[in-house]
Length: 311
Image (cartoon, rainbow, N blue to C red; front, side):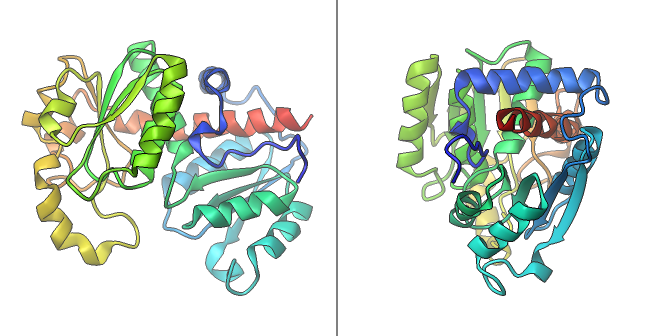
C-alpha cells in the first residue's frame, strides 16, 4: 500500500486539526456547492452498498456529481464481495477502475482489507463498528447551530454498543467535546473504545465517559443524540430491545433535562414513539433534517480532502 495514501475508515483517522479543516471545507462547499471540482474529469468514485441505504447513497451520488466526478454504483449483492470474489481481488479490480471507493458494509475488517489492496482512497460509508461520515455531518450541524464544538457537551442515549456510539466517542473527543454515552447494562461501548477516545480527549480538552443513568447523561447537555434501537441485522431482537431500552427513549421529559437551547439529533431512520418522541423529532429544537442534508456537504469535504492528499 502506498505510504502516502490516505483513507477514512474510522473517525480518528483525522487528527483534530484535519477534522477542523474538513468541517471548514464542508461549510464552504455548502455555501458554494458547485464551485469546487476536485473530481473533474470526471473521475469515477465506486460506491458499494451491502446494507440498506437512503441518505448514504443519495448524498454520496449527489455530492460526487457536484464535485465533478462520476458516481459508479456497484451492487454489493451482485458483486458478492467476500463470497463470489475475495475482498482483496475486488479491491485490485476497483482500484484500476475508480479514483476512490466508498463502501457501506458490515465488517470493519473487510473495509480495512479493501483499503490495504485497492491502491486508491477508501471511505467508510458505514460498518458495524463506525459511521464516520455521519459524524462529520453531525459535527457540521452542531457547529452551524452552536458556532463551536470544543467545550460543548453531547449526550448519546440508547444503544451505545454500535457504530454510532463508537463514532460519537472518537469524533466528539477529536473535536474537544464532552461526550456522555448512556446505555443499558450490556449495551455500552467496549471499554477499549472509551480508552481510545479518552486518549484523544486528553490532547483536545474534551472527555469521553459512560453514564448509565440517562437523566444524568442528558442533564445540562448542549446536544442530545439518539439512534434506532434495532440496527440492521438485529431485527429478531426487536421485542427484547424495546423493553430494555424503554428508559432510554428520548422523550420530551428526558429532553427537558438538557439545556434550554439544546438541539435534538437522530441519524435516521427514526421510529417515533420508540427511541424518540414525535414531539422531539419534529419539534423546533430538532436538527435532524439539517443532519440529513449535511451528509452531502460533509462527504464532499472528506472526498475533496482525500483527493488533495493524492496530488
